[in-house]
Length: 366
Image (cartoon, rainbow, N blue to C red; front, side, top):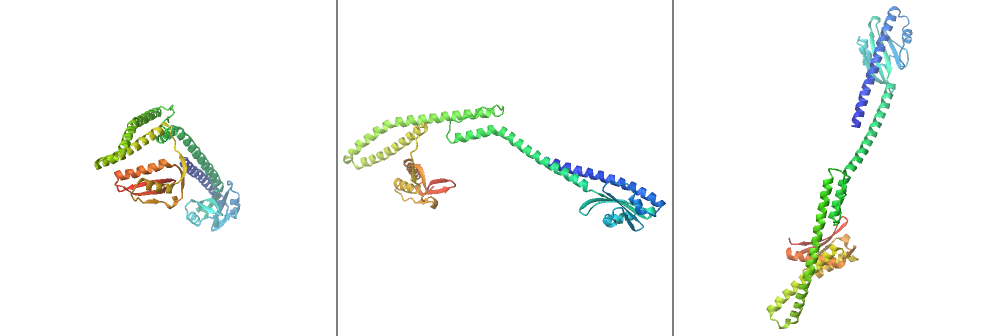
């Protein structure tokens, strides 16, 4: 908007000033032409003196053409300085004016035919001062437009930040909530439009936190309640194991199935207990430096009897990371176990780089 206003102002100012200057120069030329004609009709003996005696504004150079001879007051602006088209048109009896470039300056020439004395009168008016004025105005307007643009941008940036700051805060709170910080809340807003949004977000966060707390308590209670019967079952299985030699084959097969299921049941309960302890904040990862590629190969070898190929990115062959070794092995074992149960077995284990992250992927036949 600033640029459009500046351009429009420059265009209108230029046109008005040029129109005024051309009108003034034309009126002055016609007045001097009338004076020259009157004096030459009474005495043509000194045409150069007639031209020299004319009163003209500063920067105006009169030129008289009389019976084919040029009489300029300023020798620099003789008949050769005039555009040929303008000179021919005026000599044919048609008054005319024209802007042109002469000596790297902008000039305005106005011509009036003097048919009664077989001549023509011209005035060459310099527009250099007017061009300088227009250039100064243009620079001022461009500078003003630039300042107005920068000021508008700064004001818009400040206003936008002021308006959007509560929304940015809600976005940050939502991100914190998504990363597990369930106690995150949004400050109450004084804006009547944003206050309901902040209140709704806080209510949602509180409900979500309460739900997670209930789930964590439920998981903890279930895992603790399951430990007692699990211990009883394990003891019973151990007693049966001691009597294994006296059992028939079908009983031994059934015992083997029970042992496998009890081991799986024990692992599930231990995982559930561990999850509940992490949620309660009473358990932390035991981080240590491990060679990731070597750890994955060992975990795959220990977790399955199948020949599962391990595809390791060459950039990660010697990478060392900080990780909880036992739990990471357990995660890989769980993935392989899921692939065997729900995907007809793992086909490949990948260790690859994804931007700044390291990805461990287990592919199955599905």
